[in-house]
Image 1 (cartoon, rainbow, N blue to C red):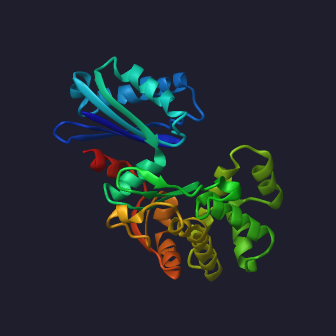
Image 2: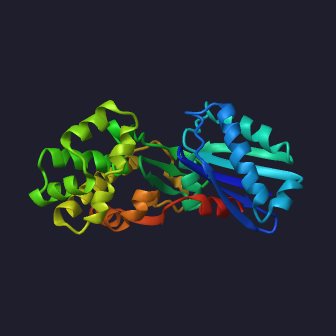
Image 3: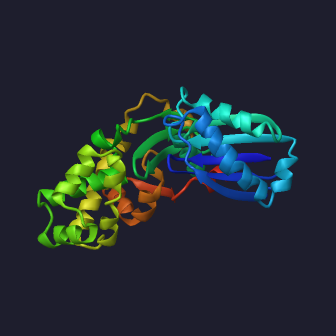
Length: 300
């Protein structure tokens, strides 16, 4: 029996995979070892995950499972922080069954394995934030730092929101666009400055404004704006993989012009993303809103 997880700071998607490939999906709050201590993670596992697994269709099989393998992919799961998750999983799960293996890895590797399985490729996450990597079919071999929403994260929800409010406040759009923006969001110049510079989680606030572009994606000015946002992602991130010091001959069928995506922004804005990619000579490959199904296939 295997337990597979894809975790962000807000929520964690889990799949209990049985010996006969039966699948039960459950959801808990997010787990991020960069923000949480081992005890906090154990509390989520004990109070949310275990009761949900026991109540699942495979609950009885889980309770009497002799062996359990755990594969956890998450935000904040750096080599330094991952032991917190490993310890919490070991303490919690070993009370129910023998834990044969625990593997805690980054959400970026999870995205790569979900999208490409065991085939090399360039993979990207476009959600609230952004990230990308060159994947050899098992591990990440190169990563262009996304630099976060202040210095980078091109193409992400936070980046789209940041540029949107900047262009609205500086009157770079036609008048009807910023009139619609103020009416629909109920924001003002003062509230935007307050939430961006003086309140916590400014990246989430900025990302929360990006749906305005989704609602008005057919407006010529918004369409051009979105294309430029996604073009900047390719120019400032993906082009760099042509210069990395990796022996590309070892990557077999690797295609440097194809990029695979996971995340809400990539999913919602797939037409604009595809158009931006084509304008620069790239092709959008697989697109997933969430990686959990792909991870179940990888570990199945």
